[in-house]
Amino acid sequence: MKETLKYLAGIAGPSGYGSKSTAEQVTQDYCWSSSVPSHRLTAIITGATSGIGAETARVLAKRGVRIVMPARDLAKASKVKEGIQRENPKAEVIIMEIDLSSLTSVNRFCSQFLALRLPLNILINNGGIYSKGLEYSEDKIEMTFATNYLGHHFLTEKLLEKMVETAAQTGIRGRIINVSSVIHSWVKRESFCFNQLLNPKNYNGTKAYAQSKLANILHVKELAKQLKARNARVTINAVHPGIVKTGIIRAHKGFITDSVFFIASKLLKSTSQGASTTCYVALSPELEGVTGKYFADCNENECSNLANDESEAYKLWKQTRFLIHRRLCQPTA
View 1 (spheres, one colour):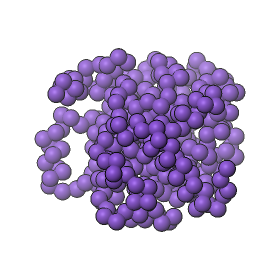
View 2 (tube, rainbow, N blue to C red):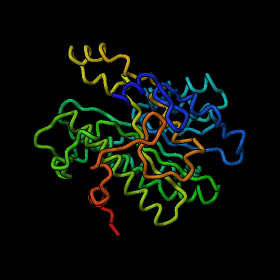
View 3 (cartoon, helix red, strand yellow):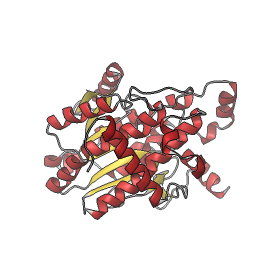
């Protein structure tokens, strides 16, 4: 009850920000284009064609960050780019094609990005879908898991060495952010089975979404551990943006959902409030070197016991890596 009242009131936490803080407010002191002109930050933001992702791209571009937008819908991406550049004509926004549900498409995007020889300071794994019915990707993997988790895991793997290299060359620590959700805590240990994630027998859209968001946090926990072990100057953290009425939420259509939103409207965040935690974790100097954590309302928060399970995180990472490399016929180490 205390936490709910704190959320409703927008009371700031230790960071100085809270549930009512906007993305612009939490980044107002950070302008990298002027402070580090020779090392302009470059950020890749998935899912930036609408909602929280588009707002994240707009605000980071306003702070002088070069934005790379991987998108499936290039027309929507172009509209977001036009909006960003209308507000800030000097903003640099690069649009590239990707389908996160396709390992081949992710692989192709990474090759094309690396060919640009740009630095890579920030990777924001924000894109996500909610699928009401059971669908499969071209790799024959359940669509929500393929898009929200598997595609991002592979994207991160393919771009990680570029981030490590950029951090070593510039002295600016790289940051990876996985956008998760508080509903990761709904997942029970006994139902979190890798083979069932790939090909569920009894599909439930909300359960599949929650499982993909749990996987995003477990990815953070394991990769943070690996990066620390090799003394790499790259951090990785997970964020819960809050409940925002975005396209994903609107996928839950019907009278009950609309009624719930009417009753709970005071609990919903604006798009800019929803993007605030991602932007804070991406740019705040207060988080220099902080890794393997889970943030909500711009403050470090607790995730579920299952999300904190190191053995579960390692098992998922190992199973995921084996699956990806087997599907792409690449040898594993």
